[in-house]
Length: 462
Image 1 (tube, rainbow, N blue to C red):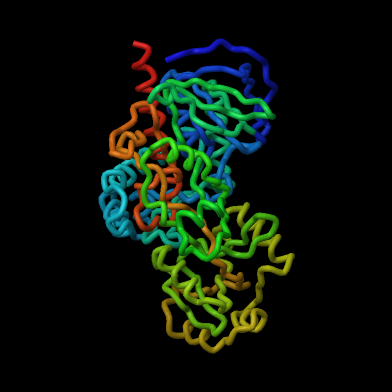
Image 2: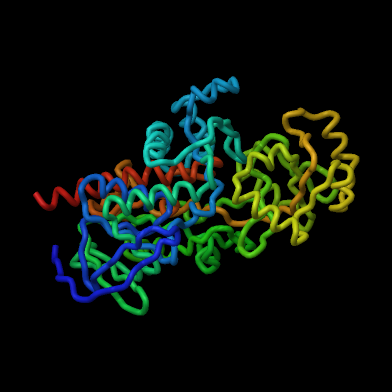
């Protein structure tokens, strides 16, 4: 593999969290492991590779690190009997795996889902070692099927990004923000690096191994139209543009399930921030303009999204009590109040008053309260409501990987120096993703990708 000398000096790259910036001194440079994307998967991969003694460069096209993880609710799924027993819930990695299999409906790779389930607890402990502090309780969030969702004590997804990016900098990872991955550098049939654009300069970064962790394509209307032509809307709460994924497909890497996307009943949007109140299954109603519950709030996400889309032009709302609002992260509550003061979210001291404000009949709601399960009924005032809109939240299709997180050729052969993790992959979740498993997937396979990328890079030096 060719190596080039360093040519020119570049300026600082700010992380946006007040950390000391990394300095990159090259128009042409090299590293052991190049990581593309700085969300949960990318930061995990970079940190593991650095801990293995590798020289690591991490690319991020935005001016700040974090990707979709930064804006996520921060929920991470893992069995934790010590905490779950306090609420009389039984769980195990095997039961988690069984639920993942049921959710997948025969698509994707069961071996990957088994790794996801059985490595979730170890990775939870790893996150704690990096400084992420979790609440001493678990939640059953929307679309998760079981109370095993852990939430950071501080600011949702931001907690992960702060702690892991700090750890990466401490280990000497060069984090290059504002750096757009424009293409692979190919020599013969081998990928040996990447072309990167930064401030108008086209750089060449040569790498022994590359980890692709640049997310999905939910925020790319052209790709959505191409791969999911049946979808009649392209609104998305994801920042994933899919450019790295498409370049990998064009290169000849195997991809699958590209026609499967996860849509969620997103709340009102204000300045690109969502007013979400549907996070938890308990004490939640999904109702239409007739006051009718049109789907089981505890159903899988694909079931809920299909039911919402089937409502057509009917207005639909999420209604919750304040017992759910108090459990939300500070950032989600901030967005909720911003939308409330902008007139896009409504609250009232009684359900009857709330129904009057949003102009739906109270009688069906009253009947649900009187006849229904108290655990499903909003009970603590004030009560909140937000319009429900179907938004693309997560693209389930992407690159195929094996159990070592290697990318595959179209014939299914592993590519020794190419790895992938997170939403850019397409054979982990199958037809449906359980709520709270996006971050589990990203962290578990990000770590695996980083470990194996480092192992292969170090083998080349021997």
